[in-house]
Length: 347
Ligand code: NAP
Ligand code: ZN
Ligand code: ZN
Image (cartoon, rainbow, N blue to C red; front, top):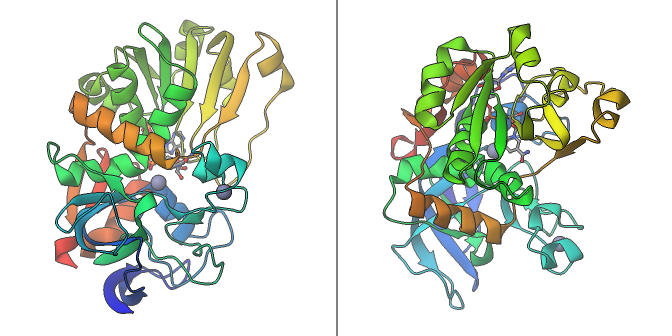
């Protein structure tokens, strides 16, 4: 066992504070990573505040992790000491169920081992995330990172990047498709960049007029202000695909009305409370309402390679780890442009 420094929450109401955790010895198939940067996802906030239920404390959040490999086990094939590596939302899965066999470890039928607020596959050992100095992970769940990109700005790709890339690929977005992205935060800004890089005609649908210029710089071709009812009239029946990243409860029916016949809306945001959907919102136009959870390991590597090829990274505000509580407050006030990343050197 090795001791790692970390930042943890000890209850839903306590601010995050310095903490120590134990990391396992490096096993034959493991890599040890010194964490350089860790992004702050809105899911970290939902879980620390126990908004989804089932939170386990002490909790060390963080699943947008990049760093350098400091040790490898005897049987590790794909990494060596000194390599860059990334870890996203999962650290293990059963590897044998039908979902795992289809490279959809996020839907592992035994339940994947999530990077924090979960357990390893033994269902006993708690997992602790990337707000920490180091972690040890099976090499099958470590990702290759291109040295071409700014490392701190790559961190958010490990969750915000894959979570938006996966539905764009699953719904086969191609050149000229009309894609609407709802909510310009961490996920939303990656959805805009990725959809634009795939050749889609992208419309940003936002509650914040002040983000219009940024949305266009990120690659959006159009902007719709969702606090203005006229936007819903103007864009009725317009989109092939809508990617909804809003973190708070909102009326899905209004957005479903923006889909063309047989268009699809994909929920990525996980508001703590449910919202009713009227059957008519789907029946008229044979529309689809769906959801998507991160992406499998193979697809995460594909996304990282796609980003390296297209020079895509996240827009970040790099902060010392001591400012994590302030960053959470700012995220709640919708004051993030467009992802906070913790500089783990400051730990
Ligand atoms: P974020 O950076 O806080 O962005 C959320 C955006 O939603 C805000 O920037 C804002 O955009 C909009 N918004 C916030 N509150 C709103 C409200 N009350 N009404 C309308 N719009 C509102 O969050 P994030 O990190 O992108 O995460 C977004 C959601 O996705 C969270 O619920 C998170 O847990 C979830 N998530 C899901 C997955 C998955 O696998 N499905 C993965 C990661 C995260 P505008 O200012 O443009 O309106
Ligand atoms: Zn996340
Ligand atoms: Zn499985």
